[in-house]
Image: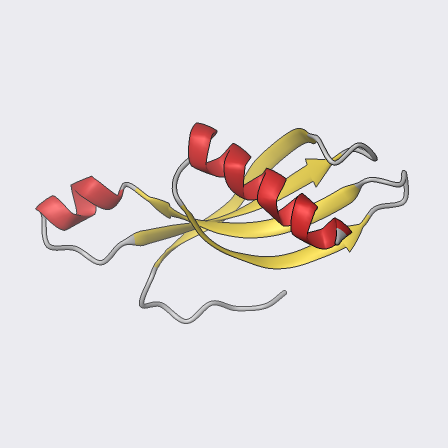
Length: 88
């Protein structure tokens, strides 16, 4: 299934280059036949554990081309894991 491959590519990219993946919250097609994925990652996990703080979760937009390759990513926001997330 195509979406599973896209999610797998995004998970692999984020785990290797940004931070451990927490969850993928959306997968959408873009106007130029690519894909936009919104994902959450655990930021600064070891630092937060060391100081007995709640983990930080970063929300990222990830763009993929028609070949399902990551072409860009951008962090949208950061929140504490226990905070209630807001949908735009």
